[in-house]
Length: 352
Image 1 (cartoon, rainbow, N blue to C red):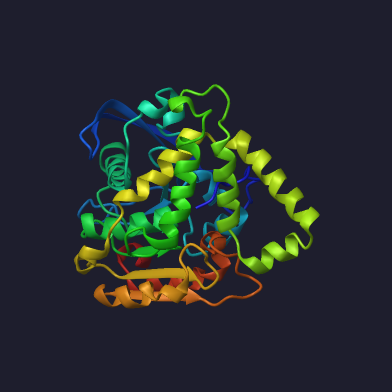
Image 2: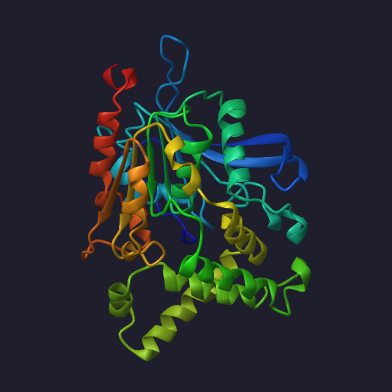
């Protein structure tokens, strides 16, 4: 969910990713607007393989969170646990596709020049861009797996409803299959309103990042971890202020206010609840017990997973290894469930 710091040196246990860019022409948004072209940046690892019928059988789509990008999936805590030889997503066997979603990273976004005149996009628009990247740009007609973290996890729920036959399995992490509401809506509203209502936002045509971006950065920091880790990191008032000020100062240079505001507003069309029965393939949803954004006390995941025919819900217990919402990117916590899901949805690509 949260912005990712600069990625360090890549581990040596898997090949370097291949970057790419695909231009989608005449992209129509759900609200009726159209752009003559949008750019979708992506990374790939591995090579596609096709079965006897010519259908791609080893592609995995990995989707990032709000304000994130494909770069977060090169972090050692994710990539070093999954991509190497004999690891769950061994890139000598799987073809990994990791896009920068619409509005994020190096893909088309408000800060490219249109600012607040950029069309308002939602999760359904983002999924359409992913689908067109796959089918038109990369000629991928089927996915072995869709997995995503936070916003990417929410996209995975929607993928299962919108394109129920396009994948073999789904693994949403750090998400809930319900409309954004309650505290989850409020903290997003604080970010959106803080930017849009700041006097130096100037209708989106600011030359210097508006003061509202500071509010957004503070909220991102507040929601991103668990209270125990925060107290360990900031045991005094002085230390708390120092840590928060340093984080905010960094994010004021890393983030763009319009991009952040649009990214959080995009969740307003997210509501997989009414169509959960449309999900056909095995789905394993994973959350952590110390996630402030998706707290287990709500009981939503346990209740709604019963409506998914082949659905399973796992809430990782709080421990000294969990890190709040960011546990979704700490693969050591949940990769055994990924291994099990791939085994249970065994296809020819696994047996070659």
